[in-house]
Image 1 (tube, rainbow, N blue to C red):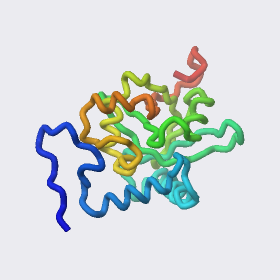
Image 2 (cartoon, rainbow, N blue to C red; image 1 turned 180 degrees about the vertical axis):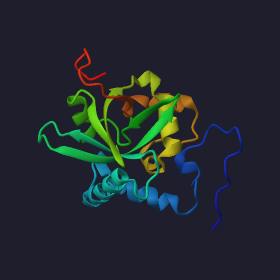
Image 3 (cartoon, helix red, strand yellow; image 1 turned 90 degrees about the vertical axis):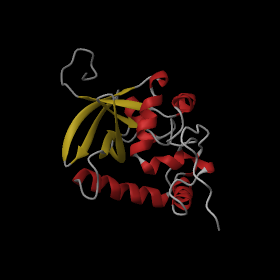
Image 4 (cartoon, helix red, strand yellow; image 1 turned 135 degrees about the horizontal axis):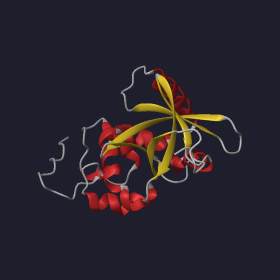
Length: 191
């Protein structure tokens, strides 16, 4: 079986299906990840793995500095929901991206909580997550795919795609800027 030839330098037509970026292993792993999140909802296996990853990220075990646990209060149950996430850095700021798009619980819970959340990675930090307008998301999404390999199968474009392709899909993937929480701020959100 012969492997396809890699795209040439400067080729802007790179797409996830046209080049298996790590050979024979990534494509089946990407298929498994898409299966675990079919319909943009985690199945039982994904929920178990996410719970394990959230605990490991919070304890800083087997994780990078950018791997953290997001905790946000559920707007229906009131219970704290923990989700493993990857922080993307861009332009001196830090961001969270919803790899599954708009219709996920942590995004709805976060919006209902007016951006108030907790990030855990060894320690605990109260934060306010401010949604970034779609027009400003493209470079952040590109950086996110560069640092979050587990998210790549959920995006319709390659991490090597030009910025214009990221602009075209930016409205589909919420991005939140991470700001420190300041108790007693005048606007009521803690900013």
